[in-house]
Image 1: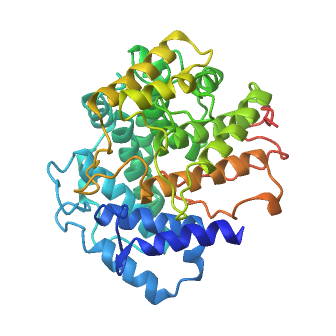
Image 2 (image 1 turned 30 degrees about the vertical axis):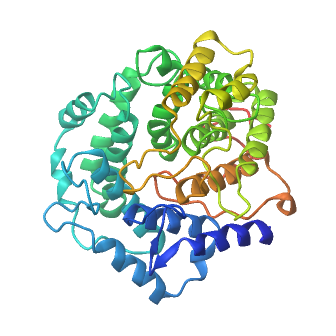
Length: 405
């Protein structure tokens, strides 16, 4: 246990460039986004619980320095327009989670909440963001709004925010597709549906809301896992796709009892796959197998072969061929940094998500404490680091459901 945590923490310290400032990777730069990712890793590994109030105060001041007094949004160093766009909403969500785990509060009120006055405002906003159609990024947009409303309700107890959250759930219940996700195109029933829909489902998990078509969701996730144990459409996995799938399986299957043996096997394979992405320096990369040219693609073809539904195989092959033809050697910056990173670079995002995925699989598989890599400290506030620990030997929530192991 100590060895794993110490290796990760040693690498994380090598990314530090100042008080609360961390590079995304050795060859990339820093931002408030990357500061949040570093903080989440420290917290997941339990380090923040021993931090002094002075150290936490420095972090709180660093985060609050980015808050806009007029709107209440937390603004990135760049690309802070428009205010209702993904970079601003995403950073604001990350900062609220960061302040919560540090025991801090925003410097200013969240005045931007006045954007949503009634249920129609919520409905219209979600429609405009393409949430009903599963537009790329719409799952994030929906999750951000739910995070803001949840934060406001839990801080103030105002029932109005709870009414707006009910409207949020009503919208998503109404527009859910036959596979349990959101969107009408074919990929919204497998890879894209899982990745995009995870964000909405996380809100369902937090509020312990019933999820319709749960068994279909489990079927879809199991169908996209490759022979190496990853859930990404490209070889070697990636932090987002893998965590999305693991989180869905560990949360939904604990209440449905659907295909328990296959879910257990899937999570065990995923655990081994995630461990394999750890680098010699202690950090984690996105993929060690990305087909960045046609020769690498040819070597990866056997990894793409698995008896899965034809649309899954087609999507996987198309994505991999696209990367090979473009000769794409780096990821995009995702508005988090100005310098991209290589697929094989140890980086904060994948290290956080890989460690979180490992913790989720170990928790769901109910491994003996001595067999676990580390004792995780999951975030208790709604957001990407949230997880409610599942004791699979106890009664499942809401009654009548069967624990999956």
